[in-house]
Length: 120
Image (tube, rainbow, N blue to C red; front, side):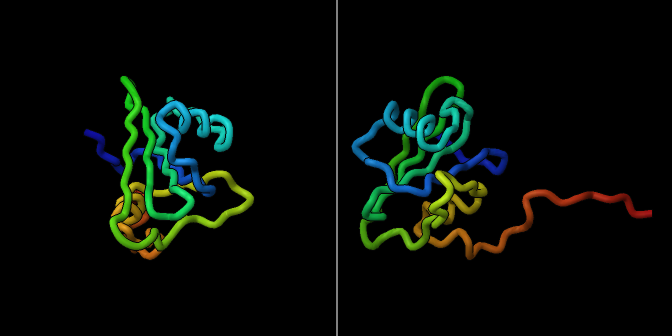
């Protein structure tokens, strides 16, 4: 079982992927289009052209996980629109919202890191 935790790096591919691709094809896409190492442990998120499905690719140290979710109704409401970038980073809690069909930019979570200062 795979679990996305807050310390994991998540990258969302801006352009849609050909969903006929499997693990090897998506790993090749990570290297060629995203200029990232698919063996890094990063969670790579892809969508299809119709915005009805998502695939996650992640390497856990022993092998690859390929997770696929197809919406039963409707389309993904949000996807990053950065034509000059191949991928955009996302926080783990934002990925959870996206996988639930929501808009991750509308989440109001605490900052990822906060400075701790001694009171005196």
